[in-house]
Image (cartoon, rainbow, N blue to C red; front, side, top):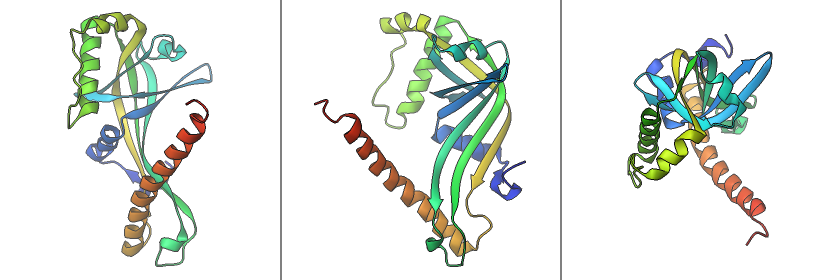
Amino acid sequence: MYPPKYHQDYTINTIKEVAKTYPFATIVSAKDNTPFVTHAPLIFHREKLVGHIDNNNPHVALLKDSHPVHTIFHGPQTYISPSIYTTKQLPTWNYIIAHAKGSVREISEANIVKNAMVKMTEFLESPDQNFMLDYKDPRMDRLVPFIHCFEISVAHWEGKFKLSQDKTPADIENAKQALIKNNQKSIADFVNHLFEKHFKGTK
């Protein structure tokens, strides 16, 4: 198994915490050597993962009937410069990722689909709950026929946590601080730059 064992995490609750904190998942299926990849939020319902996508997405055909599925939850990641270490090291990349492998079943009952959407909104709005999706909102009934709801029964969880575990305690701490700092700064810089380019001339 790769990466090395000291970069693997087998503590289920810790791995699930990544999925709960970063619920926007990469969902991967395959048919006849052709991969299907969709990005969508997934939330927990008991021990299963629940999500929904546009019914026109060709991936729908593989998100039903107990097809195998692989989901990836991407936590923080960053380049680690040797300059942050107290010892002599080479450049590397640190990251926190959770993988879930299992099988998928379609949810077609309209009332369960609507309830799943309400529960997902509650989860994503927490802890402040500034918005509550109304189960009885007539727009919900109009939307249900156009979405494909599904649940994933997870057979195997795997954590890939590359956190400079093979370094000294001081270097591990420095790498942790770099992971935090670089993510905060890079997100702000990138988003501001992207918005400036994308919306340039649209105002």
